[in-house]
Structure formats: C-alpha cells, structure tokens
Image (cartoon, rainbow, N blue to C red):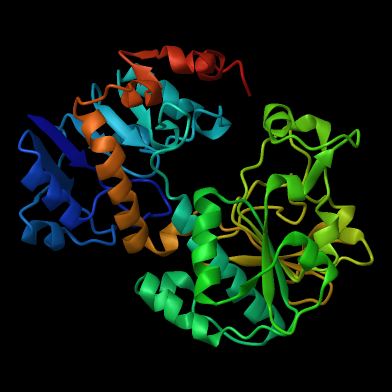
Length: 404
C-alpha cells in the first residue's frame, strides 16, 4: 500500500493551490486500490477540508505516516519530514541562490526530492506544469492593464473572480480601437494559455508581414515564432537547430514590431545565451509604440528591458520610463505599462489546481507508484539516499556553497 499525503502549503505569501482536487483524490481511491490519499488540514487552500471529507478523503493534522508527500511551493526547512519522498517546485535545479539551504537540508534529512519542473518524457518535454494558467491569467492581466492605462474600460482583477468562468465573463467589457495591434512571442503551454483569452475576445490573427505592412479596421494580433524576431548575426539564413543549440550567434529583430504594436504579450522561454528581445536603448527609439508589456515569462532585468522587477497579485502593474530607465508612474504619458506577476496561476487557484491535477493523474501517478518503465521519477529526482543523483550531480558545488 502506497500512502500519498497532500501537504498544507507552508510558504509565505500563502498559496491557495493544491496538486489534487477533492474529486481527483476520490478518483484515485476508487481506481487505485493500492493507493491511499490523505489531505493535511488547511485553512489556506481554495478547496476546503470539508469538500475532501464529503468524498471520503481522509483529512488529517499530520502526514508523517505517508510515504509520498506532494505540494506546490517550496516546503519551509523546519517543516520538512526526514526520510520521505517529496514532490514540489523546489527552484534549485538552476542553482538559485535563495534555495541553496533548502536543498542542503533535503540532503541532510535524507529526503528524495522530485521536482515538478524536471518531470519530463524521454524527449525532454515537461509532463506537468502550471504554464497554461500563467498564460491565461497573464494575458487577461495585459488587457486589464490596457483598460486601466487608456481609461477605455475596467476589468475586475482575476484574483477577485470566483473562478475562470467569472473572470472570462469580464472580457465583454474590453474595448479596443481599430488597428490596435498585439504582438505575442512564444507558443508552448504559456502561449497556448494566452491564446485561450485571445480567442475569447474573438480577435483577428494576421501573419507577421501583414502585421507590419498593413492597417486594419479592427484590432489584430500576431503570434511570432523564434525566427520571426531573431536573425543570424552574420546575416546568413536562420536555422532553428542552430538557434536552440547556440543562440549567442543571433540578434533580435523585435524592433520592427515595437514600432507598430500597441501591446506586447511575452510567453516565450528565454535562454540566457539568447539576445535580449528589446534593450533599454531600443525602448528609447522615437518610433517606439508599445504601451503595455504583459511579461508572463518574467525574466528580471534582462530579455525585456521594461521588466525591472516582479509585480504582485495585489499590485500587478507598474510603469517603466524608457528615458530614465527606471520605474515610474504607470499612468504617466510616455511610460510603458508593465505587468510582470511571477505567480500568475495563484490568481485562479481552483481552475489551475484542477488542470495540474489532471496532468498528475495522466502522467505522474503511475510512475510515482511503481509503473515507471521510462524512469520518469528517477530522472526527476534531484536527491536520493542523502546524495545528489547522477542527473543532478552538477549541483554539488552549489550545495557546498562554492557557487554564488
């Protein structure tokens, strides 16, 4: 018998998300006789304890008797239970300095850490993520920002909505002028989520040459592939394989869109070796037109010059003054409005949790409970038996404090 415990989220600020909804827990209990599920009591998560209990799911004060403990955010060091198998977003595999002590404690406590972010199939594709809801909420927040800055309409903040349906009902208020142009970078889960909002708004899609060359009697958008806003530095033909293998040999061509677009929605994955999408100098150009940057990717002070810091759910917007290269009044003329919330799925915790739980049931549950021919869990385990695994041996200097 495998005992799975859903832990109470302990990190501040509080996160209302959970890996499995009550009905998803019930599904496991009804279909996996060798698996038991226990939910640690919480007054934080979006789903109440009683909702689990009504479906026959045990709610407990302690999950110490469970074999596998699953959560969303990093577990505070003092709450880690030794000799357990944990799944959560640890934010350690990129050697993030702020979580070095967490990984060290995990090793000291002989914990097997399985990081959601590195659970992948044999082709290296992520199997579980919150990216779709980051795209959904981030795109919505972009339109919220434009309404606020332009004064054309008002939208209720996503976190004040009961659920996704309540949020999407707000979209009828969106009023965009003719020839309003939106440029989007990135596809994948995040870009796909953003497109779900775009489709609800029934906006017309145009290809990039049309976007650049033509005017329209309605608002339009274009969704760019990497070869549409990057070029080989030496002027030779673009190769996606070359770009992904060594992006340092490329330059950004995004300025051709910045001079005609009104809003930019950033959904891409950015490599630190890749060129900045737009720089501080780019944003000073006399023909710069973008008024709103919804930076869902939220890489700080690098790829997108206006993203100086993360914003918050409570205060999702700030202004970037391209002349002073500093933060300024969001409403001020000539200041770029920035949306850079770095925990967007938290704004719709119910829907984001259900979506994440569906991916867990489809891709993770069976490997986690023993049916793992592709070694999905092994490859995603950063630690085992008090040591870094071979897949994450590169973190040795990081753990020992020799990498800053």
